Length: 136
Ligand SMILES: [Zn+2]
Image (cartoon, rainbow, N blue to C red; front, side):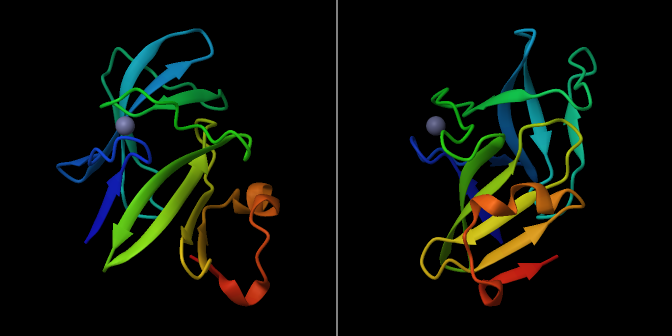
């Protein structure tokens, strides 16, 4: 069982098997997005009146403390924390709607699980020896 949480306020972000985040579009439209917490599953849902536009960049926020979750150094990636089976991970995913790239990095030993058809795009951010990488 995995548990996602905000890197800043530590609020638990999963409700009813949805990773719940607040987002803002380039046109300043704000909404709530439900992401599938399973690594490599890119199902999303939103309120029907809040439409996610493919290929557009979104700013992500913690719904509890409103801190920006878009990473300051890894451009176009969003970062949340996660624990699973007693291990702590950083999970990164693309802020572009429709892009499929996820990086689950073990905070201690730096092993990474990398998923999604667009995964090659951001691998440069993770200076990992090949032996530390696994692909989903
Ligand atoms: Zn927070």
